[in-house]
Length: 113
Length: 114
Image (cartoon, rainbow over all chains, first blue to last red; front, side, top):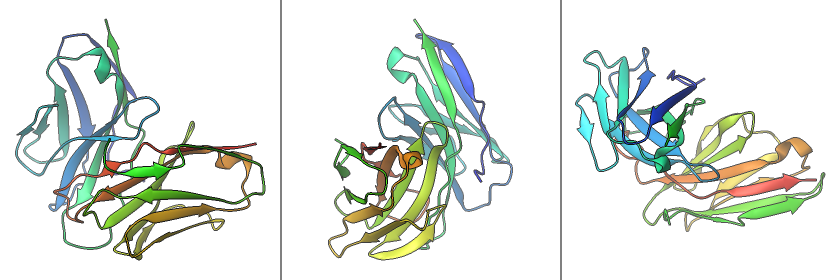
């Protein structure tokens, strides 16, 4: 089962910021928080990841709660091309060859022109 | 182009048949993962290989098998195909097993069983 919970769907107006929440209350100290997005008929695409501190890259920002039990993906200005399913997953940080990562249903983001 | 190559892109076959899906990981990536995505199931983890050896297994059916070859490419074999096996099959690769690295997905193989 997925270790994260996300809202099934969200809507945003074009050019407005979007905050996509994710709960991961059972996160362990070595789990990294990853976000991916999947456009229709395409493979998932890496967006951003973090461990404890907030992270920024050209695609988005990731805000991680102090207790790490939740995080928020922030798209600063939504465009129509950001309409996709967004997945929040946890990835084990220990060096091991076992790497089973479960994707939940994600959040389907609609962007309204 | 993500660097992960999956072939073929589309495959139509009849029930009872056997097919092989191929995945070439991104250069330097040792881990390969297979996922199945059908309309009502989301992304289902099937299996993970690391440097030629099976490392993690999901809800992969006994009719399905996979392997990773010395050149690190991987094949997913699906046999005794049923209508319900119709889905998108994605391969992903990763260059390390620690959390501080992302997965790179291919564009998938769309399998239609008729």
